[in-house]
Image 1 (tube, rainbow, N blue to C red):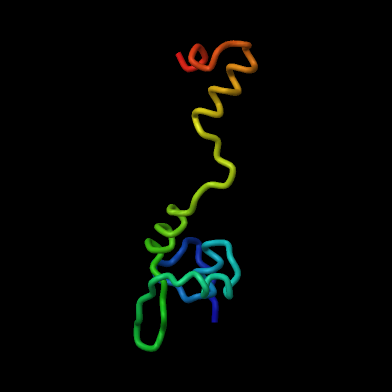
Image 2: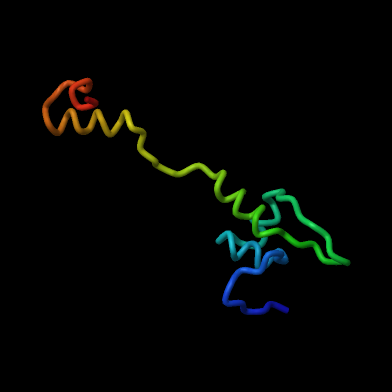
Length: 84
């Protein structure tokens, strides 16, 4: 049975942990994240979920070099002038 919280609990079952990360439960179970045991319950720690999310790469993040190159083109200057 799923409960509704005004905050994320520290330890979560798979359904809540998947929802916290924004993925399906089947996708979540394929991630091979560490879990803890309490009695017969398998639980995931909020801190481990946050750590996993923090380690994901950004999609399409620009590098500093590409921004400098774009500025150089926009202002019709050499890249080394735009970097200064």
